[in-house]
Length: 247
Image (cartoon, rainbow, N blue to C red):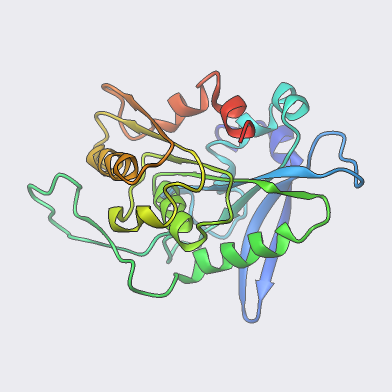
């Protein structure tokens, strides 16, 4: 498994969440020294478009290693959930122009007047169900994602504006008209590479400016010259987990 050691991957148990005929594959890592008499935070992380599939493995390629690190697991014990989106679906509701031309946003158009998509809808049902677990600290449920998952993160924030404690969207984008719904509810740390050729950095800049205008507690880190894989820089931020778990 590229990017994560086999033993790290084994920490994430394979599960399938089912609702009617629809199912969602996901991996879950339990807190280090798990004690059923304690309550723990939850991290929900959404992968990018390249990790879509049905193997229930590819979604661990980026990010899983950070949370599985032995030092981090002891310092920040938590449930960590990585759902997997099937190949034919997308976390966020978007339409994209085939030839965006001079569009600084890369042709991404976030559709917010339609019902939630199938896969993200299953993620909502999964996290709602899991939040009812007695060992979950409902005041410390965090969400993040990269690329397509960053877009899914921004969509989850307005669809569930009173649910999360903090969010970390990486090289994503979203609908700026929806930020007022959640802007003042929790802190957000946004990351993007300044030279991203896949999801233009303008997407994150637009969201950050809109969040600031709406009074949000938002931090923005842009990496000059970095392309689409800005998640590597974000995961290397020395205060990332400290910041996340402080909320």
